[in-house]
Length: 349
Image (tube, rainbow, N blue to C red; front, top):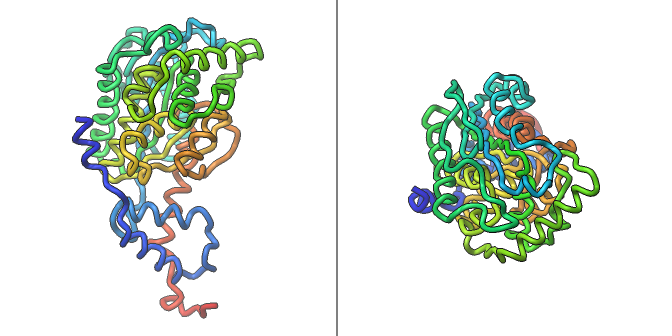
């Protein structure tokens, strides 16, 4: 499944992008006056291979949930059981992501790709557990290569299923206590940045815990020496099951030529892995927001993505992606609905 997905990912369509730029030049507005939104709409035309591209709707959020063995290194103040408790909260509709999804009109699907606790079947829950949490990445590989690949393929299947159900845009979500530690290690591995440059305070740890977290990431990088040319190997060494699944989710969107709005630092880590698997996959990626976690900025810079929202968010769940979705839709709607100078009888400059 992974090989077939990678084979389906192609570069953006240059002709459609040229048509979008030409159309922007004829619309009733000063050239370049919509800033980042103009280039975003051009990129989406290239992704779809047509101008104007489809308006990206409806939206579907997939929250990939998993636990982490590195939790035992005391890199967070939250107990591990919060992962399963928050999954229950998502399914009950009581989390921030649910409130934002209701406001935006998006569906929410929760995917158990590696939660350490047993979960009861429920509407909106996809049970696709590869293993009950990763091993401790500071003591050895987080998972095997086969497990990492299986988690990637979970994400590919979820992307395919949501697209088949009618989704026109996918939004990344994540849940996993201690997952910002794994995300920092992944971002460092793919960018070459130091542990200190990419490790943040996650859910708001104190100074002592933060220093321990940086040391854990640094030690893991020195232990594993992950090779960015082997992205599945990097995921296996220092990643989380949700990061691997998010990587597959992003690749699945790219293979189907539909946009995927990347949320916070865990999604950026997964996007780096996806880009290492298939550089052309970046054409499908939209940076929903700039997470307060420093690794997110480092990762977005390497991906060449400009975040649409910068509000100091550091929640995850898909919240930043949901806030950005109406902006993405607006950028495309301009190409569908704004009159040209000729059609409106407006004099050009």
